[in-house]
Length: 303
Length: 296
Image: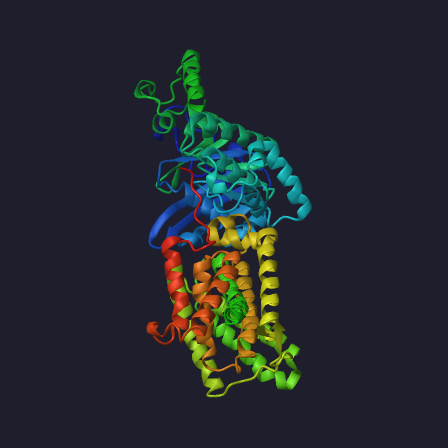
């Protein structure tokens, strides 16, 4: 472990003394493999309002990274900065860089970001409600040659068979869970190397949320990197290898997801695990029995 | 009965031209959700180029030049003005198009002056007699061309990538961009296509039995506006239906003007707007306009 926050790493490292629970792993331990997403010193403003400040974040190729944070922490802004959609909200990157696969994404229009293999599933699904399910999927493949689109469609329908059953139904008439599947499926039609997921389980029943989590695992297993923004911290930490906590536009914690899940700070603020566990002194080992108890509780959250 | 049939057939053929103009409104609305009030001046621009060039290069070449010129003017309006008008509301953009229309129409009517410009079409004043009904050949051609173009656009919106991109961009521009849709290109192409359609419509509006292109042609083009609205601004089928309803209503009301004298003069011009109001009261999205689907 190292306390040094190197360039292109997981952002400002929090010293063990500043947080409760076990010390978070050094970002150097998760240096991105070549070709992943690298965000360095990112600052974003909406007019006079600074929404992100000095954010460092990395998603190595083939990995799942999670971003946790309360409402208004800057999670969606972070994804907008990557996907090139800040201009739709009158926002702009004022300093720092966003790079994927070695090429810069900051200042690149959204459609060009998609062509570079980075595709975002927006918060709230935002399926094209007036179009059918099949047309929504086609919209996702507009920048892809026909043969690749056909292969992508096959993969998506294998992942979400319900979309084949609903192919000719208007997307606005699908249930929330089906709309989320369509939103993810539509994004996969472009064959992304990196999938940005903004609150994919928001407003979904626990069973459906668990199903979406399984799907994210499957997508990742097929080689797509994932940057997951989630308020359901238990689910996000269970899925991710590395996690970041955003607070008021800054990364305040970062490290391997398992270590973040074990930290009192994260447990108390984001996992809703109560005071008794957090009362123990910083850095103390809760013991094997305690760990088993925590894991049971986490598992219940993700079910 | 023969009078009624003749008015009906003529109404349908005039309606086909209105449908072409309405289709231009629909194409832009489908791609950008902006109501385009510049359409009348695009039409005037296309007609003006055809009228000025046909003595020099012949009718068909002049028609092609008119279509290209109107498409170019449409694309320029989008590229130079609308794309740079950083306003959040599409309503404000619609008002910007009114301003652009006033500017373009003022310049074009200044150039036209008091002249009535012939377009040099090959159909002349020939008429077809179908039993008791007499109809101008130009109107039959207009009907055939409008029907062909509307069917082509209907299929294009449904089945081509361009059509899907347009509909996606109109429904949610940000999400369409997230799917890789190049919004600028979609919007530019929509304006160019609308301009081209306006030029074709201008040609049919200004040939027999109309004497030619004059400064009032732009006002005639605005009659297609209720056609687009009552058909449903985002519906290709609606453009056809709306155009036909407006054309038939206007022709019948004008044809029976003497019997309807108690309604005053000019009822033929007012009737399409009355029909539009009644239809919108009954169906707020127009006859074929899309209602936002929602689960209940």
